[in-house]
Length: 189
Image (cartoon, rainbow, N blue to C red; front, top):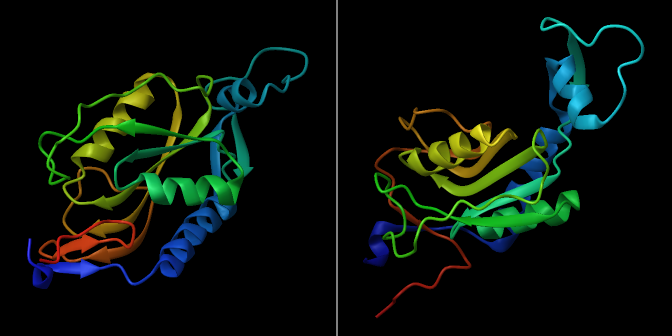
């Protein structure tokens, strides 16, 4: 790959600032959820009487993740930064959609059982949402494992609308050159 067909991510500092923006977004997020899920996840007792009905809602402010999940390879570095910023454990998954535009598919896909309990809020992180296949497939898998999944990426290619990530830092054109992050090794000769 020639350097003229690559975008070099400006710096570790900007990468860190992007991760801080992701954390700020989720810390300020206001949302409603089913009361039963809230009580199940929080361990709080809903009091005396009947359990929550389907339409019973609880207003929440700020996601409280119990685990950050980084998609190897590109999502590991931003996931680690976010994990440190939130003081929440991080685990990695090795997965690349066979239909995606990823890193050459040079590893076996592996979606492990996570250490977080079911119904926990987890954040799945990747570097680039290109076709969307990898993030959607990983997200769908962990939803079926009974996790409350949120997603974050650094770069979102326009037109990749299988399912938008919950938050992204920068949208780039669909035909944008390959992005080289400061932690990646490139062949300059």
